[in-house]
Length: 198
Image: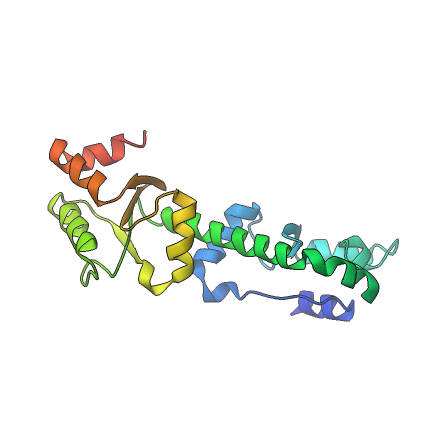
């Protein structure tokens, strides 16, 4: 509440994201920004800090809060900066998405991104990889990519792997169904999964 009042009183337009609505973003952003608490204020994709930093800048009377944050004072300056506004917004969105992807891939030691869930797989490849992992007595968590298109598309770029399912061990991509099938044929799947990332 306090930081919102400070920004509003300084006539600073801002957008906000409720971290309580998405725990992956909440945890991932701490790692991404190396800042352990909330609120966090970003300007043009760069972390400024939390409430204490904003209050310090406000108390420094050498220039306005807008000036401290590198924001334009006039509408003319705002118009000049509109050209880059879309790019800046996209960079912020990408940074938030990458933070979320990193958090998700580390959510469990063995993490499967699939269509559906282990109880109700929604494609044959996802069903097969779940069966292989279960038969090898490998505990895993999963994420249904059909429920979140941002994750579905973003993970392809994040991992540079174009298809699903995707299996991660301790945050590192192992591969898809074909890789897991090959490893299962070669011997102890559990040992191979953890050895392949060492």
